[in-house]
Image (tube, rainbow, N blue to C red):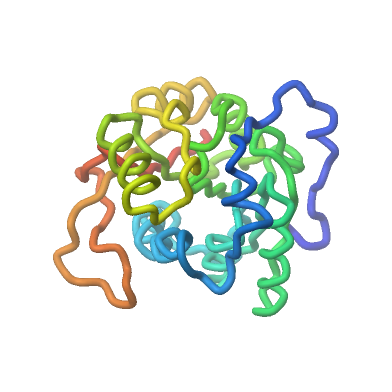
Length: 257
């Protein structure tokens, strides 16, 4: 948002009918008892996925310089900082105040101009038609009221604006790999971080996007990378022809008129 006119409103306080559902272990993993910076442990994959996911998102944007972006569910600010370094004008929101505080402190340390606001995904403190793009990565699978969240994202987007996201498919593969293998056996993430009933199939998400009045919608999955990535990056690329059985990515556009 333009730093001289941030477009903040008390919209959330005026619309208290929908409150985000947070599972008991969420504050432990996403809030005060975790550490986002320096990147380590549970958060390494989230951080290293950024270059890969934005290789895909870049196909729609071309450039991020001077683009007004809102990152919904920003956590410690991984996506916000990634985009700010590319010249975007970035704001981030998250339900966990502790994560917002750490994100703000790290951005200041890195001399990055990023605005952060504690709020739910269902009630964003911005006026209508405010931002050029909204990112929402590793978030939708944690949100109970996806319809309200998507409606809010659509509301704050300018006509022609883009919504970029990734989330987990609701399949037995995702249940096995994320909940059983990831949280219980290998334990590379805290047990209880994810709640499988909140996962959503691409067809169901497409329907919600259409009901929220988004126009064009594209989904993409993962493909094994032909060349090894440096610095421990994920060994895959993102493509509309890729596999979506566990995780999938997408872009949806708000109609121009």
